[in-house]
Image 1 (cartoon, helix red, strand yellow):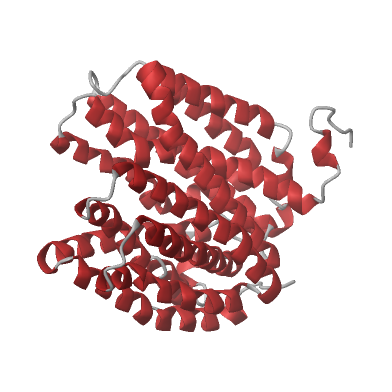
Image 2 (spheres, rainbow, N blue to C red):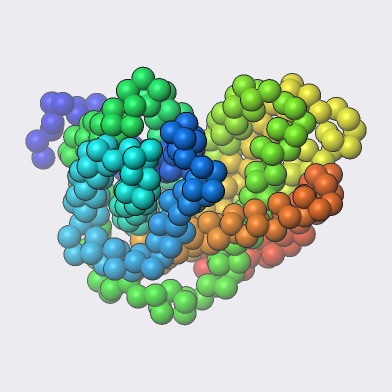
Length: 413
């Protein structure tokens, strides 16, 4: 095969690294609109003079990521027929077009159209996520699952930082239209880079002969334990995350400190996933890695309760304790999703894994809806204690699930 002069550095890499790099670029691209929707859009709306009541509707931008299981089977089957890489590039082009059109509808003049456009943009990338998941499951199951999920965590985080904080920086200088045009340019550049790399993630025809059907997924042995894992593993952590920002504000922590603390937590989580999670899965396998990392991750959920109870709440203590908690949580995150990737059927590479991801989204929504009223009525101290106890209790089904799924997973070397 003729080597490309423009991408010659990739030609010397092992095939597994070519696939990992390709998937990493795809996950980074998906993080950009997610960062805009979750971290920047509400700020832009408020700066534009939109009321808090109206800003509440911005939560709808989360729906495509929570509901993508509805079209996961159709998308997976389309990828089998036409190729994952081909469809990913087509969704990328559709996203670029959406950004360009959306640039003409600033939220202060066209809130409904701007909201609809961002929902559409996230729907496009949630669909692309199904295809990217399919490529990851098809080519990187086994001990390479840790590497795949580690790169996913880091790449998606970097994309979210670019789409969130990066978008706000561009918005401050160039406004809504300029921000969307810069985003379109970044996605177009990414599209050009991916153009010669897409061949590394195309489906293996010998493994995808049968169509992806939701009923087959429900019938797969271990389905109940896999779904339990996806619902339970992030419930306590999601509740803690929902409490953190209002708690820090009520403790009169400076906004600048809260912002840098958020960045520190995200980076520690990415570092833990990329190093701790990847190495644990590679050395011990995903099933054992889940058991090893679930325990310290749950124990560290009590960090904020301990700081508050001992009256040692300070900026350095927050950076240290929350950074450590996020480091281990990132490692546990990679281990858990490596286990679920290895359990997912190679016959349905996009459907199984994407459906289980929706379980995490549902758990986050439920956790936030339960913990906030508790904190409002009983105070932060009891709420933090309940989060910690919940995390410890959920260790039981998580460890049981890891053991039950172990013989059902392709956790090979």
